[in-house]
Length: 126
Length: 163
Ligand code: HEM
Image (cartoon, rainbow over all chains, first blue to last red; front, top):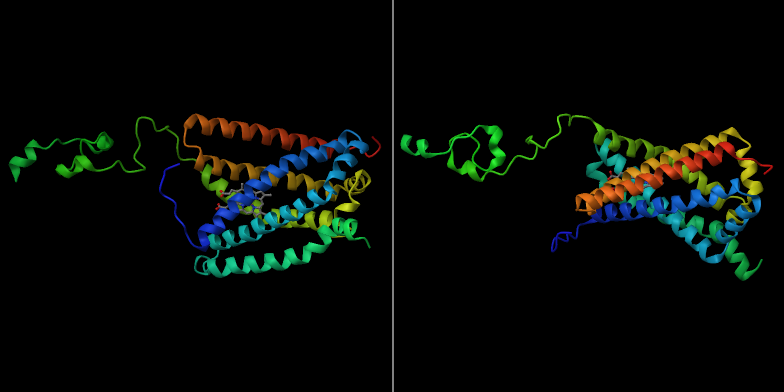
């Protein structure tokens, strides 16, 4: 990479970085996810065994993290589309980014208990 | 001045990239950088396909569909009805008994893999500067994508609840 060219941009650049990082992350997860789901073609036992790891606290937490990545990529992707196709999009890109962040925070807060319920119940009981 | 013009190397504009001038007779032309879109001997004859524009458009169309497909998938699998704790072979069998959910998952698989691999192509093009590195990374990524899409498609179509 060319040296000494680091541009520390504003909202537009950082949202682009986050969009790229989350996109790559989701892509790699998708490989693993198709492979583990393919075990339904092997036997019910092997599928249930691999799904059991999805229910461990660590992986459960990673599911919450993956949800965070997908949700940001999805909402910001809609923002990118609005910037490209909506005549007022480019002028409102910053406001739209903060809207994305706001909606993301609300949805992540709402998803906290449902997604982590399995782990929370196993730790703290009913 | 007429005398000066005679000493200037005059070349046709197609030779602009040789650094010998643009052919206008202006000596400063020798330092003009080749225009980005100028065709050279290496330029393939057919460069005017719309592949990159179609890829750009596909990213946006698939993105809109994926919002519904993936957020719906996450809602059903991770959020509703006990979240991840309900998922097992029987749950999958129940869903894939319906062509609707089979079609949902098939479309999601294809769109997400094509969207993701085309996005990865952009990322690789941005960071891998060596021609051979770029080619290898994209070949590897493409092969993994084809394999995963075919495997996933096969699993959805040949799923057997009584295995
Ligand atoms: C959930 C709905 C999704 C939406 C709305 C969406 C939207 C977008 C858009 C509009 C772009 C183009 C950005 C640009 O040209 O600057 C993009 C890029 C990308 N997406 Fe998605 N996407 C979604 C899901 C996914 C998924 C599931 C994956 C992974 C399998 C993924 C991986 C990528 C990658 C790797 C890029 C390239 C990033 C870059 O060039 O910086 N996206 N996405």
